Amino acid sequence: MYGDIVILSGAGISAESGIPTFRDSDGLWNNHRIEDVATIEAYYRNPEMVHDFYNELKKELQNAEPNPAHKAITRLQQEYKNGTVSVVTQNVDLLHEKAGNKNIYHIHGQINQAVCMNCAHVITTWGDVDTQTVCPQCGAVAMMKPNIVFFGENLLYMDKVDALLHKCKLFIAIGTSGAVYPANTFARITKYHGADTIEFNLHATVNNYDFDKHVMGKAGETFPEYVENLLKV
Ligand code: OAD
Picture 1 (tube, rainbow, N blue to C red):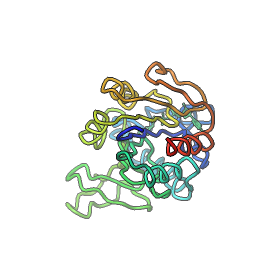
Picture 2: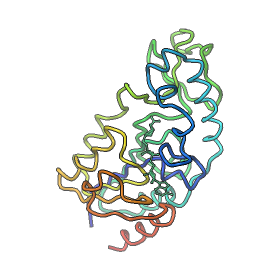
Picture 3: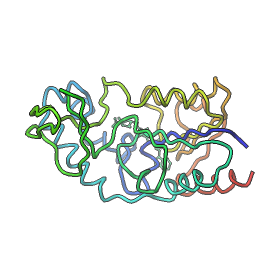
Picture 4: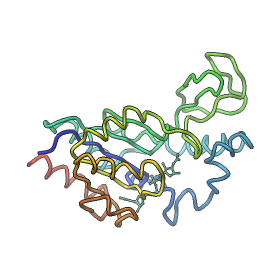
C-alpha cells in the first residue's frame, strides 16, 4: 500500500462528460488560436473577445455532469486508508466538485470565477462577466478577468501543490497530453522523490518516460477498475 496520492487531471478526464479536450482532433484549440483567447496579451489586447469566449464556455461547462472516472476519485478518497488523496486539476470545469471529490486544487483556475486585476478579489458566478462588470470589493470597472490562468501567468496554489508533489508516494495522471508546462513536470518531480507514477490516457503521451506504468483506454472505464484493485491491496 502507498502513502499519500496525488492525482493530476487534464481535459481527457472530462471528455466522456462531453467536454471537448484542447489538443485532440475535435479539441477546443482546433477552432481557436491560443494566441487569441488564452494568453494574457490577448486579454489586454481584446478583453471583450476573451470574455465572450469564456462566457460561452461557461454555459457549456455549467451543464456537464461528472463521469465514472471523477466518481472513482470520490470512492478512492473515501475508502483509501493509507494517506490523503489530493486532486490537482488543469481543468477549469467543476466536475471534480460535482462528483464529490475533496482536496481539489484548480491550478489553471476555474470557469465560474473572475478575479479583479486591481485588488485581486475573486468572485464566483455562473453568470456572464464582461468589461462592464464592477468589482464588488474595490469598485473598479473593466478589471474583472476570468479566473483562468492564461499562458504568461503564474499557476495557482503552487506552494501547496509543490509540497504535495514532494511528499506523495503515488502520482496518477489522468487524461492530460503533457503538452503544458509546468504540470508536465509533476510526474518527474514525484519520481525524484520516490513516488510510483502511472498515467491513464487513450495512448501513451510524449513524456512517457516519466511514468512507470501506462493504462490505455477511456479513463471512465480504466480508472474505476484501477481504484477497485488498488483498494484491495
Ligand atoms: P489536452 O487536450 O492537451 O490533452 C487531453 C489528453 O486527454 C490527450 O492526451 C488525450 O489522448 C486524452 N484523452 C482524451 N479522451 C480521453 C479519455 N476518454 N480517457 C483518457 N484520456 C483521454 O488537455 P490538457 O493536457 O488538459 O489550459 O491540456 C493542458 C492545458 O492546455 C489545459 O488546462 C488548458 C490548455 O491550454 C488552460 O486553459 C489554462
